[in-house]
Image (cartoon, rainbow, N blue to C red):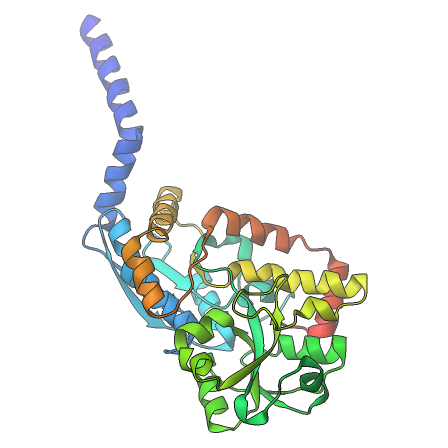
Amino acid sequence: MQALSVLIRNCIFMGVLLSAPGAQADEIVDFYRNKRMTMNVGSTPGDGTDLYGRLIARAMSKHIPGNPQIIATNIPGANGLVAANYMYNIASKDGLALGTFSRYAVFESLWNNPSARFSPDRFNWIGNVNVDVSVCITWHTLGLKSLAEFMRRDLKIGVTNESHVNILNNMFGSKLVAIKGYPGGNEVNIALERGEVDGRCNISWSAIMAAKPNWVRDKQIDVLIQFSHRRLNELPEVPLVTDLATTDSQKKILNLILTSQMMARVIVAPPDVPLERITALRRAFDQTMIDQEFLSEAARVSAPVDPVSGADIQQLVIEMMQTPSSIVKDFQTIVGGRL
């Protein structure tokens, strides 16, 4: 009986050891060691989403237990929707797949778009690299210097997503013409430089600074409006879209889209990944955000870093999915059914 009692105690002791944090950490190391991860980038090469995705792919590996290699691959289409669908339905759910795509893809499920084959709240949100501001710009040859003139002109605006154009047209009476069909932001940038379009809306300021800093340095663009609750320090004289709002309904609709600025450069994992691996990935992301080597590299390519934790993004998405149907309906009417 004494021997049996000792055996039971030893089994209990071993069970405690195996369930301890150290044992779980060892399991994470064993899983990720010598593995290859994929960063699925929901854009074409060369734009802001691609730049941030590749920055994280290069920097995050050393903070993941076991130091797996992270390889970036591009899955462009539908302003991030193709990549979001892939991450939700096809990507491996073992913790070896990460993704990054436009924050507006998240809204597609909220709007009941049948092409959005995912539920945003079931994604595992790892973190957000930067809180960003979207702007509308025009090419310098047009000589537009005021928002009033921008709103009066019939301008061709290159878009991968026409939400901001529709907001300005349908809510505030501008005359912008959305030129669609571009697979990614980089192609819109090329069209702008060639003079095929007059401007861009719904382009992140960080994307401009990261991918096209010469536009700012050489004064090749004019920035006409910021989609934000507060002005960027770099753009103190550029009006906010909220300056145009005159009714409570307009303010609520704008607040919904501006909330998404908290998700400018999201990193996401598929649903159903084991919790301990999501915890490890979130911790690795947080450590990357304070890694001086990463911050130096981001600064070198003019990619601002203003992170939000994965847990905070997860809660934000849950709250967005609970948006009252009346606001959703009003928003759909304004933006034409889609962000």
